[in-house]
Image (tube, rainbow, N blue to C red):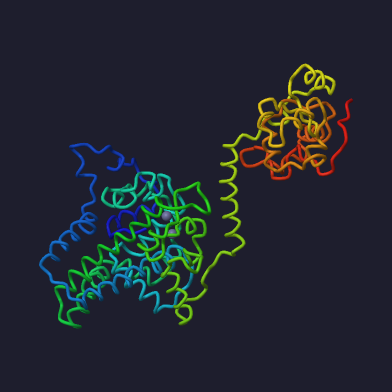
Length: 465
Ligand SMILES: [Zn+2]
Ligand SMILES: [Zn+2]
């Protein structure tokens, strides 16, 4: 979001007309930056609005004493103009996440104009492209081009308006407040950005200069930087509780800086929700204001995604994280990859000295574990060459979940006719019943208590064919 008045006419032209006309001249942004042409890449209007004027403001502040009242006014006006962007430009016009009565619309269009970030029409068009084409070349402020590009670079360097993704703004073109503000943007910018804050401080307590420097210029600088953080910081810092395929992130620091726009992972997933923060304890003053305006009859039709849908997204993202973690663990050789052994061969190999134990139709080589067996060497040795299904599952000791997990790493073969294992193998072969137990990495999910070696009703012996 956020951008000064710059490029306005170009972008408006680019958005409303198709690229039909004759041979298209290469845009300067398509040329590499060289020592000869670097200045042609710069957008001097934007540089003036977002860098030069603030620097002059900082310089002027050096000679301008701070009046306490002016400082309080600057902070209040910072909140007003910030809300003009977050509650007005962003949540009302770019996302239509609620409806506003005419007086509220006029207020938001006015104070939003005072933030000096371009007209509602221009701002919302780019922002809709940002949501539709997030992280791609058609995203006007893609963070994939670097933190500083998404924060400032995209405004300092000229952009090819034809590169930015197309979006529908027909609803905005029919909103008289938006149309009026767009047509009279320079007037709105001057009056609401500089004249009004100066007048309040000047007429109120005689601090004309302080009003101009602090509540005007420097306040504009702070609001602009705060908004730019939504494009940079909110795509850079924090968690991704709803979806991690794209860059948006949730972080409380970004929320503090941006009047509550910091829960950006949620916002990109549920952009038409009037909230950014869904928990009561999260900082989202923009949401609180919209809610208060509703109580005052100024706002209505506040849109909210159902909690069920929000939680679905959260669970799916958690599932993805679990799958990733599961893939890093050793779950033993998959049953279907194990060789099939006749029962007699199993007995023969055990008699020849291999420490093989049969449990639930799966042959385990426990030689490396005999000395570590918590139940002692004698018990484990007594099971070698035998079907120990029953004794492992409670006949002697009902082994723990961890024991079943560990056992899976010792498996070396499956015995023909080996109870459930062969049934499972058959089902897997026929693709029956196996799908539900596979995660997004196509790996079989082994839940606690569902290991193949865990048999709820112990059986006595393995039936050899
Ligand atoms: Zn974003
Ligand atoms: Zn948005």
